[in-house]
Image (cartoon, rainbow, N blue to C red; front, side, top):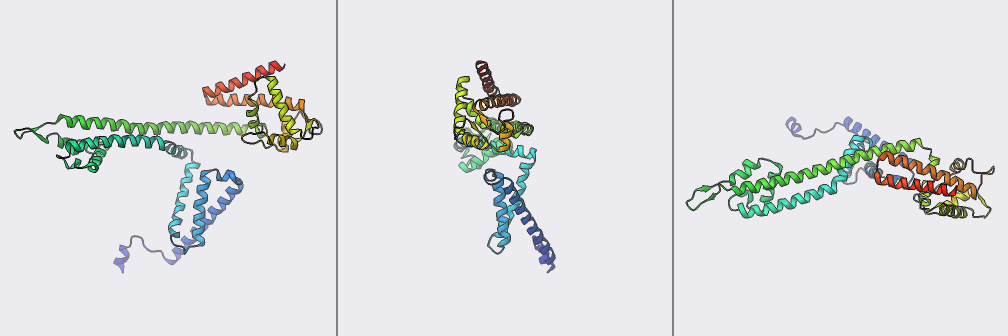
Length: 362
């Protein structure tokens, strides 16, 4: 019995140990479920499902809960092992791991293309090697062996002593004396240079995407910092500002603002309140749609609305001019921090257009 126990790859658990492990397993499973439900409640419906990490969490937790509720179902114990993939969430929480992970994901297509080129080049050399050395070396007897041998050359695994040098003196002249084949050196040296270049292309792609991900993370941090420092009420009309920025001159802008006001003034009273303005703005195609709350309306209309909280056309127009100027100033500052010349030029033109329109209006 002692010998059999020593031969077991994993010793069996005692009854107490099995109870403890089962209890811990259930505790972690239900803890993960509570965390998932809390996350779903915090992100409501669509925002939760639009995040790939949340979908990944949902699948893993759901499989874990099903395995606890139906432990007798075949393969349930194997399915429970999928919970170890929750460790992948560390890539999202830790910035350094997230940069590496995102860099690898972004590099998949370019790296695959580079590897395909390397495979094609290796296949070409393998075909030539079969024709040249198939009769003199077992390493190039057929295409499969030749491909593996060329792969050995590409990795640098004893390619000179084990692959190339035995072929130098395989040719014999008419008198039976071995001759040095200089073409062997040219063949393998050329392939080595090509393979090194192509492998370095893969490294260059990874480094390029790694740098891009670092810049992207820095931009996100700056964006988050700017967002946290800017009142939410000042941003509620951002999508509407993108719509009205297509104006040609001050007259055109006033006409656009008049059309927006007419959509909101559904009762034709000459003034609008919060609900009427939200109704009018919701009829305009904005991405994302404008969602104006009473708090937003009160904040935006300070100094423009009357004592009853209503806006007439003149005050609405004046408010939109002010908010448009603030919006463009904010965009200029944000794009300048990112140092994107093309975007900076575009936003600068927006600002100049607004200045000219204000001068024309004045």
